[in-house]
Image 1: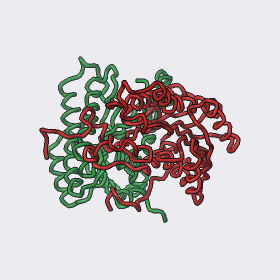
Image 2: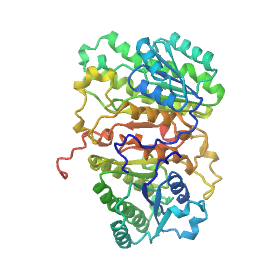
Image 3: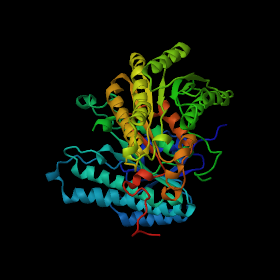
Image 4: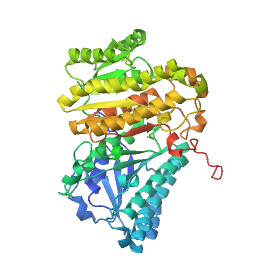
Length: 247
Length: 275
């Protein structure tokens, strides 16, 4: 029997958007990884979106996404007994559609302190394990708004650009330790969990003339976790139907 | 088991390569050779095009045990009439062309030439091979791909297509053009189901870079502290040719050991940083 791509790999995944959980966890588990899922989504809410046969390969850690202290404590306890983390994947943080003048301090704190704070803390904690093992892959999934602008998304765009800056600099900082840090950029998406019908007006601006689906990232995700992509680090590659190529 | 450096690891399962037909220009040596052999290992039938039949024949021979068939066609892709013949020959052989790899390019003789010493002939040769060649190939195959409503065009540029290079005018300018060719192909042909992407290699030693090795970076200035290998480009080529990458188009794939992430400080060295 052919060995699976991610056999014996441990992946720590952060995902705070119920629309993404099954799409980021399933390809990892299907390819042989065991997933530690850090989320603020109740287990009952996402477990019915995932094949029942795969659930046993997922260990959820349910946290309040506003409580960094709890995160630090939980990660410390968990990682002290789990000395192997091969993959650390951060799913997109929930989108904030809000005009600039309507964006409150609370919104900014939520984006930059809570969600980005969580990602920074998770990477730092798992990075210590990867640095000790001198091996690892870190992948951040970010919106294409990290590279281009869009009215009504000022704070969110800035948060995505922040993750891209982290990706580039951390890619360089941890390159000597065989840790690859990359990002996957996404464009306009619709899914079963998040169906949207008002995309007709923008489809004509997407070169492939179709809205993407969260599963479209799976091929690139697995390539970036394969043994043949170890020479790629600090990069962001978009899966967006060509949207960014004429942005 | 760790990720890096082991030879016996499982490759990614790629769909939609078996039985497909690809053209790889410059398929006799270096990155093109690796792309062709990697595709054939997945069962893709490949026409390798180039000027030198000796090296092309060696790749043909190296592929005999692979599930995909590699066959050569002698052509200079800087000549539009020869490009036309290459496309016609491939269609005669296989009836379809699923993937075009624009890989052929000049590097050695155009590297390290001061501006005032760059002859008209050498400049024109660089533009013809590195930029007009990929344009001719894409133009000629596009009608067929548009009629089928599918196809993948994969260009090979360089990190020098995204940054300046000292005394490296012809290479940087033509490789920058290849990146813009990629984007405009994506924007123009996406509506017909055709994708176009670009491999952006960093330092990958090959026969072609042998003459300019002295001008290449010491690997200690590459963040991952090593040169890349043609095999890594071959596998990336397979991913881009496969259906696993169907929603990706107009995109650049730097495979450079982290060099571009540092922007104007390609070494990634921070004098004020940690040791």
